[in-house]
Every structure is written in structure tokens, then in C-alpha cells.
Length: 224
Ligand code: T5A
Image (cartoon, rainbow, N blue to C red):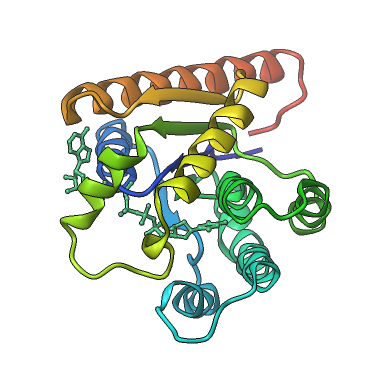
């Protein structure tokens, strides 16, 4: 039985997610491990169309519930069409944002009812979750300054400090509640220090996975 690792990267705008994903890709390539990188919202052609709808600036106000439903719709497609089939083929999947972003942005930032989010999350993912979530924690102002260097702001980036601070606090609460799945990384460190911390966490996760597979093989539970 083959099964890849599912690793998600989370954090506020400009926390350095794209930067660390490049470092993880380099590590997995050096180790000769098959992997893909993907992102949310998005990841499949259909979900990328939903991403454009969600991120484009527009005059019409987008209702928080509309936003929530579209995030989850894109996720169903992404998980069923790309993430799960890749994992089942032994391919590691590195995903730029996943369901923690929904809890942080639509729950924390937009203040939608968390019970509603939990219900939709269960409907969307049926209990499926990442093996490891790296939370790049960063002061909101620093993140926004870094993100601002990129040019035109998308619809989310138009939000103010208070919104992103609620997002950050929600991420932290979720990570602190389940420490075995999350690694909180101080993203205010230099790029190199952040990359080293991320690589250490990914190596540990790979080692844990390997030792679990060895135990399963010894017990005769796995036929490779
Ligand atoms: N969203 C998403 C929801 O509301 N709900 C959901 O369920 C989901 C899935 C997606 C938007 O959708 C929202 C959240 C988002 O607003 P996105 O493009 O995925 O948008 O997210 P962004 O956060 O906008 O992505 P960014 O590209 O802004 O941030 P990154 O990837 O975290 O940052 P990165 O790596 O591009 O770095 C930004 C800059 O900082 C520098 C880099 O060189 C770069 O210039 N940098 C550092 N500088 C100093 N020190 C370091 N340690 C640095 N690391 C990076």
C-alpha cells in the first residue's frame, strides 16, 4: 500500500508560504521523492476558476456565506480530483493553504459561525486531514508590508489590520489546540532560518511516516 504525505502551509498574507514551499520542493527532489505542489483556493482547472471569482476585485459586496460555500466547493473538487488520487499513488502533496485558512479567514476574519464551518468542513472533507500543517506565524503588519511589494492587491488584501489579526489569532488557536499535527514557525526570522525550521519539521514527518510503515510491514498489515 503506497501513501504519500499531505503537508499544508498556512499563515497570514506575506508570511512566506511560497518561499518555504520552494524549499520543501527542493528537499523532496534531493531525496528522490515524488511530489506535487498545489494551492487553495485552486489546484484543478475548475477550482482555479473559483479562485479567480473569489480573489478578483469587484464592486459588488461578496457575502461571507457565499465566500465560505465557494471555498468549500473548490476544496471538494481539489481533494477528490487531485489530492487524494496523488496520495494514493504514493506522491507527497504540498498544499499552499487548506481548510485551516477557511476557519481563520471565514471564521476568524469574517466571524461566521464556527459550528456552521465545522459542519461544512465535515461535509467537504469527511474527516480527511493533513499529516502536517506548518503555520508560519507573523506579525500582520510585517506580512502586509512584504505582500505589498508584489503590486496590485487582491480582494482579500484590501482588508485591514483588525481582520488579519483575527485571522492570525484563529490560526494560532487551532494550532495550539492540536500540537501533534501543527508546527508553529516564527516567520519573522530570516528566510534562511525559516527554511531550516520548515525542512527540520518535514524531515521529522517523513521519518515518522517511515517508522509507522516499518511497524505495519512487520505486523503484516501492509503489502507493498
Ligand atoms: N483564503 C484562502 C480564504 O479566505 N479562505 C480559504 O479557505 C483559503 C484557502 C489566497 C487568499 O484566499 C484566502 C486567503 C488569501 O487571502 P494566496 O495567494 O494563497 O491568496 O495567499 P497570500 O497570503 O496572498 O499569498 P502571498 O503570496 O501573499 O504570501 P506568501 O506566499 O505567504 O508569501 P511569499 O513567500 O510570496 O513572500 C512574500 C514576500 O516576502 C519575502 C518574499 O521574498 C516575498 O517578497 N519573504 C521574506 N522576507 C523576509 N524574511 C522572510 N523570512 C521572508 N519570507 C518571505
